[in-house]
Length: 260
Image 1 (cartoon, one colour):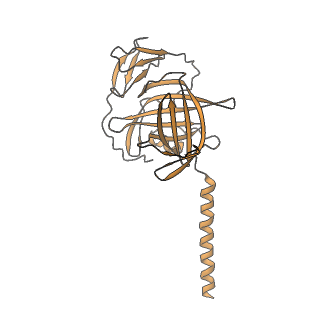
Image 2 (tube, helix red, strand yellow; image 1 turned 90 degrees about the vertical axis):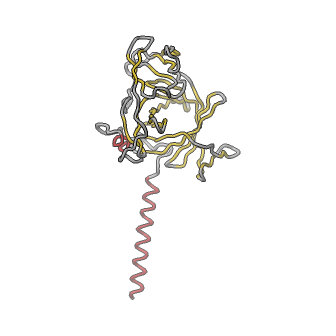
Image 3 (cartoon, rainbow, N blue to C red; image 1 turned 45 degrees about the vertical axis):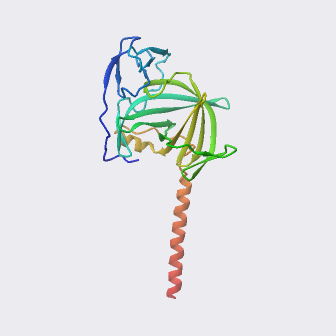
């Protein structure tokens, strides 16, 4: 990820509307691209394609809801392109009776479209949609994409438990989708299916400090807890370092032997 030399492809057009449910002001940053908009005041999910902003759903959100670590409207540079954070959702899966939740941030650039950031316990991924379908193995234990093999890590039903901002799809609280992850650290390919529709995405592991630098956020990012599914192994880097040192030592010994 590059965090310098922004080359924004287009300037975001911000437009203000009013929520039909409570009258609160709504700031629309991806106007013409948003499918649903969520009112932060009354938690109404609105149809962005309807001139009257039809209310599609209303959900309850307590004051204890965890706010986005990157506030909506924040702009940052990823891979040399300026993006703006326009949406946020929390999703939860159940594994052996235990709930695990992560956050997803929707980013938008008028020329490049949408991009996503995911965060779980201080672990971040830069996510984009695949341009072509991967090749799945016959048993589904692995897949191949652009010559790289990814092994199946986990499949679970993910439920959306909180939403905020704008979305390029019809988001709903409590909706579920089957999510499968295939990993080849530092990358992860995920499929997400709801009904007959399946989407594929590619994520790449990023350090929190790189996210903070890209979006010029104050303070320090939350420290990562544990090891994430596609987190690069520090052990492999150490092993490479050891073999490099060993190789240098061997060359030195051979040189000494030759001098004798």
